[in-house]
Length: 204
Image (cartoon, rainbow, N blue to C red):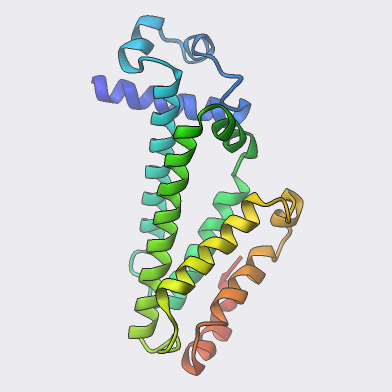
């Protein structure tokens, strides 16, 4: 029951952070908004930093599980990557810049942990896909998987963090389709290109 209560608090606080940002939601706000006592809250979390870290851990776990479920059983590496990009697009549309801003400014150690973990997951996912695509004969045999995976990670971070693209740019219909095709057309061989052109409309 203690674990269930703790997770219940985490999930409800996650909603508050998503709506109002991290900085503006105090521990007193948490007590008031989700209807628990201070004693109960502090039984599970010694301070706000611990609560913030727990919320970030939970969000990462949820997104990872959602991604893995969506990718399970995909026919080949291209279909897997089509699904991956579609899912990332939906997640980005739900993304709240205020949460990341607050995390970076007020909880830099947690922000660093979140960033490193996210980078590793994206890199590992793309690397696995590149290896699968080569094995299936859909990607060019000569591509350097490690380099391409790192370049892909760099491109995603540039889109999200440099300010080169506005939120409006990112939300524009077709934006991530262009990002995806820029990536995928550089790695497919003739067989992969033929499959891709028959299935590219799956990317919504």
